[in-house]
Image (cartoon, rainbow over all chains, first blue to last red):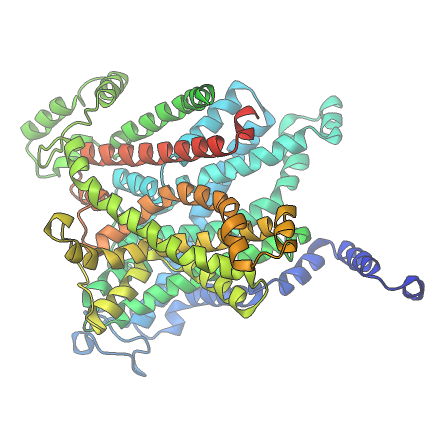
Length: 305
Length: 314
């Protein structure tokens, strides 16, 4: 320290010191520290934790049944009894927003799970067999899926399968597959040429083991980023489909569906639309910020760009 | 250039074929018999059999595909099973509304985003810059259907300035048409404006770092004139690309926007067709939209190759 000051304490030396500090802060602790410093990542994480808790504890948080109609309270505005107001059937909107979080998070996680597992598998197969017929076939299929605007493809799939929570998860999951497949293939192509993979192959390590033990860990970091941003995309897609009436069917409360109902009552009960709309907005924003934060924390070189 | 266009087009053919396979398969993804699914459970067996024969569903699937592809290549997308109108005609009728909506949305987004991006780049790290970044992030995360509802609530219900729903053709007066198109166009253009603002800022910052800009500054050119005469044109290239690549997103967004504002465009046509289980119409619209998307990306590629010859030879 004293020596470096003696040299002059220039910016270059400062940068060198910072570099050493960053290098030391590797592993989970380093990641957590960088994530804490990333812009808006912590408030975003807090919102997501709160949402998960709300979804899990929905029956405890709210005294009401999300589907129970109570016409004496119909269209009543926000009050202590109904903090977010009540809808045209007298159902408590706060309760329905809380139960709606279950649907949104469920779709977010399961749809991303489908995209992640199928996309990663296809990407690994394509990348490991780089430039063969199999690789070309898989990647052209992915290109074809990418040739549809995402919402159009999701709509088309739910149209064919029929509207339901399960089919929304399948449709949104399929729409997400190509981006994971492309990402993983690209990473595998660059990793598979490395010497230690060659070495593993030469000593006769079976292919599945090479992929599982040596290639997959290299792909994890970008996948985590993609998946956290993917949850935001999936929640938004589910809300869009439910808004159009092709997603989760009533009386199950979903934010998109509630918003769609609310739009017909804008002149008399705007709260019917504002509460679920804000819930979608805040949740999507939180997952986007968290995804950005994780990206910065996993790859410190990207910070301050 | 001709060679480049040919090469790019040939590369697109397998994707086009796969797209056609996906669109064709939609009808066969339906659980159970597609004809029953389209007509509903209460349809008579005779009606179901008649529809099966009409759509050729009684033939082997590969034969059905080849026949379907043959008609598509001749521009025949079949007929709606509800209105019996040719699908291509239904699309052509609705297309002008969607095109107008998309053009207005792009115009609004550029009117906001280009000045905002320039200001953010010129006043880098100022409050204005941070503000535009923040607003752009909000714009990307705000779901368009929620934005639409907020706009209807403010301008249609509370202030009563604009009609909240409905459509009036341009032929019945431009004023009335624009009054009804402005809210949908803002709804559709906001996310694009957010993306373009970020792109404009970063690409202008990159250009401002170049030697020729330093030369322009050194010879005493004012900031405004320098941006207009030297920096803007080069900085706009990536912006044009990003707008071109967002056309798919615009088409998806148009579905929601048209549904909320009750505009008779392609998106509304698709949603109505889905609700009526009118599969030939669904297939036709989905195919049309994906082709429009593919060819707009193709056009962006060509424009880029034309503007930057290095791409053609790489």
